[in-house]
Length: 86
Image 1 (tube, rainbow, N blue to C red):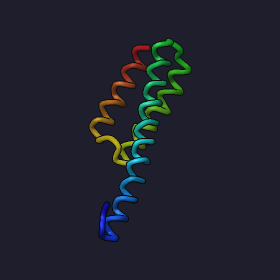
Image 2: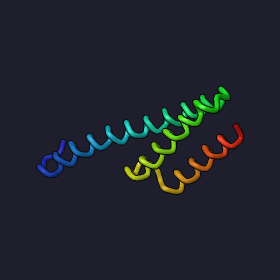
Image 3: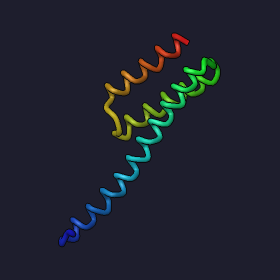
Image 4: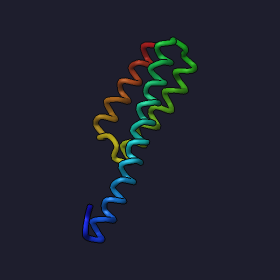
């Protein structure tokens, strides 16, 4: 346990940020899986909607610092490629 007041605050804030980051990461993974399921199903309209949500979530994750911008660019490229192959 921290003895210094600023260290106590740091523990509280870091745990809050950890929970927030975990929730954002989970949302990102969920939306990417929904897109993969839509593509595997072969439904173009459903995949198109899931694509838009997935790209939006990837961009939001970059702005929040959850993933690196190069990883986001690679992921969006993979999503677009999957859409084009559908």
